[in-house]
Structures are given as structure tokens and as C-alpha cells.
Length: 112
View 1 (spheres, rainbow, N blue to C red):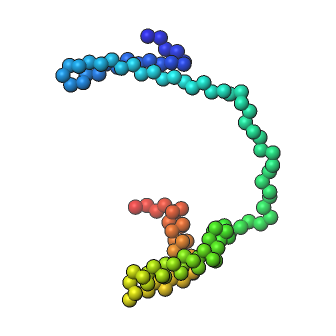
View 2: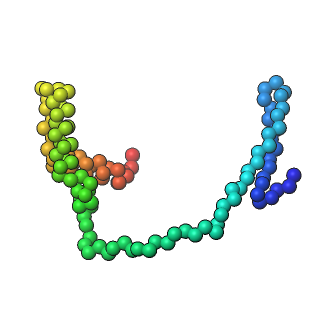
View 3: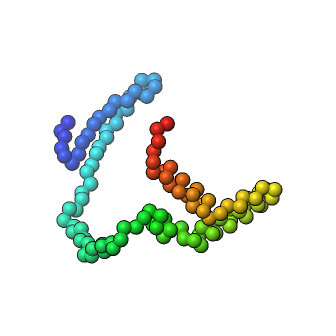
């Protein structure tokens, strides 16, 4: 059997139960990749930042005051609908603390 860079063959004899032997031939073919294609170049640059932003400012870009109010209102409504005797009364600062705790716990790995 001859090995080449484009093809590799390996013959396997398999015993399947009562003496039935099958010969399997595995072939690995390498894909023909066209390396002559040009990769486009980036023709613009990222603008320089004039100030360094805090992580909370990036968070507020995605979770603005309106979204936090909506989440708070819907959470309170759901809690009231499931158990009228025990309303949740979640506030926006509490929700921000919950999000902060979840994000912190996902970034900082503590030993078990």
C-alpha cells in the first residue's frame, strides 16, 4: 500500500459476531483549496476614543432606563398574578444589583 499526501488508506478487518469478517477501507481526501483568492483589506480605521468608559456605561447602552422599567413592571405584574398575597415590589436599583451580581458571577470563577 502506498501513502501519498492527497490520499491515505487504511484497511481494517472487523469481526462481527459469529466469524463474519468484513474489510473496510477508509480514505481521507484533502479538499482542493484555492489559495489564490485575495482576502479583502480593511480600508478604514476604528476611531480613537476620546474618553475611557466605565463598564456600567456599556451596560446602559443595552439596558436603558425604559427597558429596566419594563422588566421591573412585568416582573411585579407576574408576581402579583401568581400569588396576590405576596407581591414582589421589585425596584430598578434592585434589578440593577441582580444583573450586576449575575454578570460578576459569570466573569469571576471561584474555587468549589
